[in-house]
Image (cartoon, rainbow, N blue to C red; front, side):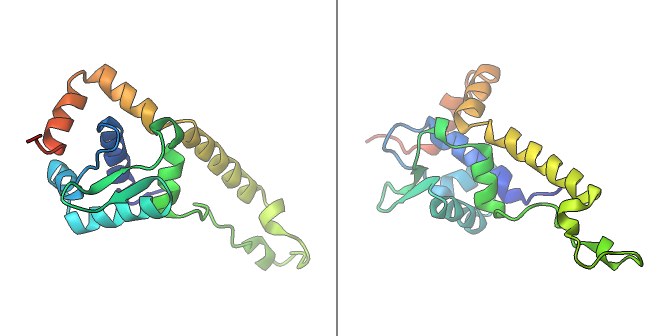
Length: 161
């Protein structure tokens, strides 16, 4: 399975936003600059997260994006679904129904062992992603890279005047 790069971008941005002070928005242009990403395309990914209720958009001179929920309540699966959509990765086309001895009344999506195997694997994958939260990733980053939070916030948050 291959996901678009927007998933990676969105996950990193949400981890960064989890570190921002409560009520403070992170400017998407600063995020794009930090990661050397195309600003317009990153903004599209962030807007998808707004539509999914993961981020909120703040207008004005200190505007940008912020988490709409606590980072403990945002799973990796939430972000994947917001960016990639809810459709299953594997789509059974019921090709067994085309074989010479096929029963035209059979539901091959449900009875085909290939289909069952793929659906079970996708369920396991989705369950694993649903157990991982932005807060958990942020905490792991902070343990492994103790200065990451401070360094990132210095680059993303405007200086106080």
